[in-house]
Amino acid sequence: MTNQPRYGYVLIVALFLAYALAGCVKTAELGTERNPVKLFFVPSVDAKVLEGNAKVFEEYLEKTTGYKFDVQVPQSFIAVVEAFGTKRADVAAINTFGYILAHQKYGAEAALTVIRHGSPTYQSQFLARTNGKINSLKDLDGKKIAFVDPASASGYLLPLKTLRDNDIKPKETVFAMKHDSVVSMIYQGQVDAGATFYSPPSKDGIEDARRLVKTQYPDVEKKIKIVDLSEAIPNDPIVLRKELPPEMKEKIIEAFLSFIATSEGKAAFKEIYSVDELKKCTDKDYDAVRAMLTSLGTSADDLVKK
Image: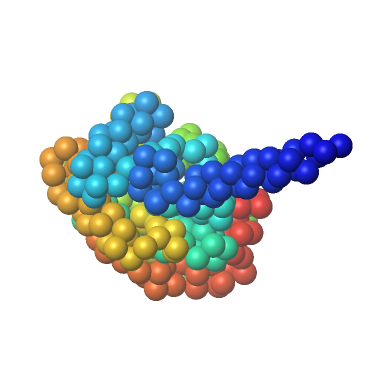
């Protein structure tokens, strides 16, 4: 019995040390070996291609900023959004609607917008067969139209807004689930028209969704034409967790910009995201996306649930 107070004292000391050690782990300075800056790349290409280029970028970031980084490739953009909520993500390259949701729920901040084909914005296109009778937006009224999927910006939401703004009502809509599948359905005559992403042509030829099926249909450019384009909305952003120290945010932003200015960095971003450049932005640059969702009576949260 006389030893009980001693055991009690030892137990209290042991618990105190355990909590102290746990506190040390939690409060390890961000950017150190024990608590690296966590950078997420949303999947866009083959995982091996993405991971290989991400590793090159990780090494550059560590050398340039002096911080330690942990680059990860999650299963989906939803995983990235929720990682901002649990502070398991500090920086991320994410799609436009994923950003809207991450900002709405957790205050994530857009810092950079990607530039593709010289533009910080993107559009949808309406496609139809060249030998058909559809030559303008008005001709889409009462027709069977293929879209990508209900949560696709360029493959549904942007073109849907265009149709509504012009009081055009399709007779029937189908969801092909992929941009190349929409093009194939038009080519095969399964639908009258379709909506996909648009990119302006380059010196190498067409860059819009038709290029995805050129191997299968070499004459697709002659058989399928662009009828019209939607309005433009901002490209996907590079996003930062709002609680990051201002100095760290600035160093990371400048490292992104200096990396893509190198030949190695330009090649890496081109391969994983078809990105040519980056430019600084703020959350206000994405107000147009919120306005579009409001006009359609939906939200980024609604799109995730579909």
